[in-house]
Structure formats: C-alpha cells, structure tokens
Image (cartoon, rainbow, N blue to C red; front, side, top):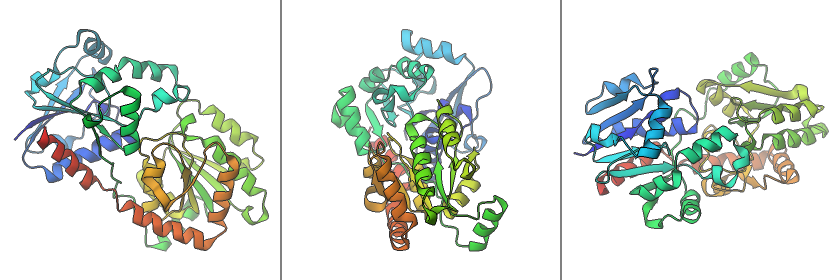
Length: 379
C-alpha cells in the first residue's frame, strides 16, 4: 500500500471547467479500480472550499484541510519553499492534477499534470492577472523538480520537452477520457421536445467552450454569416454555449456587426443535460481553437453523434485524426468550405458521424485511471 497525496485545491472553486472535470473524473475512476492505496486530499482556504462529500465517506480516504490565506500559502511555497505538505500526510507520492505551486520534501515522489503550454506560446490570449498567476507558479522549477510529468497528449509531451527543456524520459503521455454522460440519445421524441422548448427547431451549428480569444469564436460568426448569404442555408442558426471569459467583448461585437445577429444565440452557461441535448440536436459542431492540450468538447460532440469541424493546430489532429474535418483556424474560407460540405452533404455528414463514434472508443477514463495507477506503482 502507498500513501498518495492529491492536491485538490483546483476543485475548491466548484467550477466545471476542463481542469476541474479532469481532476474529478480521474479521481472517481481511480476509486473504482484501486482498493489498495490510501488517498489524502489537500485543500486550503479561509472559506470552506468545495469538496465532494461522498469522497470523504470512502475507506482509505482522508482529507488534509488547511485554513490559511491562499496568497500567503503560495508565497511561502514560492519563496521559503515550505511547508512541505507531504510531511503532514506522510505521503509516498504527491500528485498535482494542475501546476499549482506546492512544496514537498525530496524523499517524496512528485507527479504533475501539465495540460498545455498555451500561456507561454500565446500570452496575448490571457489577461495580465492570469499571466502573473502562471509566472507565480514557477512552472519550470516545478517541472524540473517533478519525478514524472503527465501530458494529456503526445503534442503536449513534445512541447514540454522542447519548450521547458525537460528530459523526455520524465514525461508520460496519458490521454484523458470522455465523460460517459455524453452519448447518443436514441429517443428522437426527447430531442424534438427539447428543440421545441428551446425554440431551436431550425438546423443549427454549435460551439461549446469558454468565451475567450483562444477559442477563435469570431471566426465562427464570420463563417456563419457567409453561409447565411446562400439561400440553402437561410434557416440556419448558430448556438454559442459557454461562460464569459477574457476579452469576450470582441465576440459580442462580432455578432453585433453581423446582419444575421438575430440568428445567433448566446446560451451562456449550460447544464450537462442541456449540453448533451445540444450535441445531439446540432447539425454540426465547430471548434476552431488556436491551441488545445487535449480538447474535450469535440470528443463529447462525437460521442453524441455530431459531425465535427475543428482546427488543424496543436493536439487536435492527434485527438481527432481523420474523424473530423480539420481546417486552418486563420483561414475563414477553409472553415466555410468545411461547414458547407458537412451541412449540405448527407453522405459526408453520415461518414463523419460514423468516424466520430469510432474515434471516441480510443478514450475512456477507465484507461486513464489504469495508466495513472500503473505510474503510482512504478514510482
């Protein structure tokens, strides 16, 4: 039996972004397959941080709960390089599902997941406060100190090696899984009722993600506006789902400048149930992101039977391969042609749907948890 300390501070905000989803699902699937090791979860905050109550009820699960100001604690980790959290849990291994700075003793093995290095390659995609946060995390020092670094994709693994000058043997690619909640809804009447309730009976394109520059949403609006000029797409709508992020104003300005503004729906935050119905009901899912370390939404859309159009950058070709139409995110013309070939061609649409179902079989949280557990054992 090994004692594994997991830095669960990333869950403290109670949000459902990609990193929180990664952490929550990975831990839940580790619980399913691991009856041997003991887990301690480290949380901190003056206010009670969010933490799944059902986890504390499990056998061989403990919680190391501190009530210190987060800024003070992080500064102590950065400057004084103390306190060593692992000593309080007598841990053999410390696993950080994100690059939150943490101090540990030299004898304890450390594993950190680096989801991507977009903050280095595209700092303009992040607000000044976020850029400072990444700097404050002393990410390269953490990477050098870690015994193993988890990368969500081979692309990210290579990027970490080249950009941070980390030995390749320290980096392990562990693909993420797909939330099994996202699947094809076979009852067509349920989808029909959903569309009527939401006034989405016309065919629509769908985007799901945070409204921020990295996701390249203005290009979706421009492509949509070009398509709408053609008579065969006159009834098409665009649904954009996601919370407001950094520099979201540019997205709304783009929509305002389109003469088809009334056919663009900004859904805002959506529940898991709503997103699943939207994936199932859409004519096509479009995700022209500039940079992704993995990218959950395109795979979730494929699992629900939506044809996917995405970008040909970063990890996306590795994750989607030939199961989606991949275009240059900087070229609107390519995006428009791809959309037109999917929406206006039932055989192309059917082929992408079929390939999408095959593609998602490559990814499961059970496989991810097995690889993580194997890594725990080798350390």
